[in-house]
Image 1 (cartoon, rainbow, N blue to C red):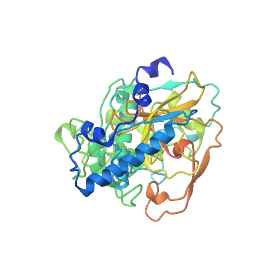
Image 2 (cartoon, rainbow, N blue to C red):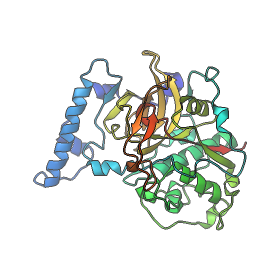
Image 3 (cartoon, rainbow, N blue to C red):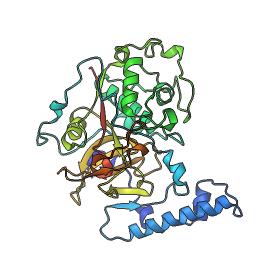
Image 4 (tube, rainbow, N blue to C red):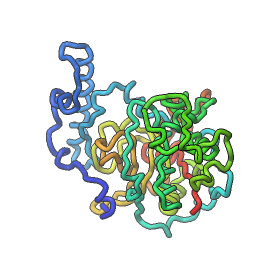
Length: 373
């Protein structure tokens, strides 16, 4: 593990080595109030016991690259877990802005000249681990996370962006990635809205983990216009945004090495038991349904296994202090199909299977904002 990354992640190796807690210990730790005689208690206990059994079986494998551990999600139903996902997409707008957006071809250069590792976890946005709660706002949280990061990189100011305002105000007439707001949308739609309208800061429109009317605040008037304008994002240095070429390794690698954090898509249905290590639990076929942020890439010093550093939005008590390391395939051969795109990535009516590449489909859809210095 690179020294600068180890400052960010304190791996739970001690907890992982210990026996997983009982359901009774779990509900006491997390303050659950289930009555033992209730049907809910029985349902939650069965969910917990099944996940505990799966985790123990996984952890018994000698050559595993990641460890399963107990977290606050282990008694959630599948319907409740789905609220933590709710992105993402390949739909229009496909990447743009009012000014010079870097052309895709610029990212298609060989990657031999890039550093062997690059991390943006030192940025203030990398220290703020969001918790989206029970709102399917991962797309908005991913958007505000990368906007904050790029603003800090290119303007030198750690300006925040309101995920709540993005949730409330971003239109989604084609139902791309969901029905809008807490029911899902896309990072592309968020980028397009912010570019045209500006965005309030977090303290002006705090996150509520719920839908609401589009909020306009007087204090945000300089960055949130009554009339959409192609130059609204310029009030905080934003000049455009783009979607990287789909399912290609080199463009994402180069964007992380040269630009900053990137909003990416992922199939996160197998992440709920993740505790630490380099995750390789997704098959090649993957239903991409969650928006997260790629904060860098590196290589394990002991095993040599390469990984992406992904910042999630399920709180700092999940995974490696709110992060997951996904196995990074450099040969471009880890590809399959998303056979049910309506569950996460497609607009309404788009049901045709689409190819996805990378562990958990991480190369499928990547969005990068552009800022001027």
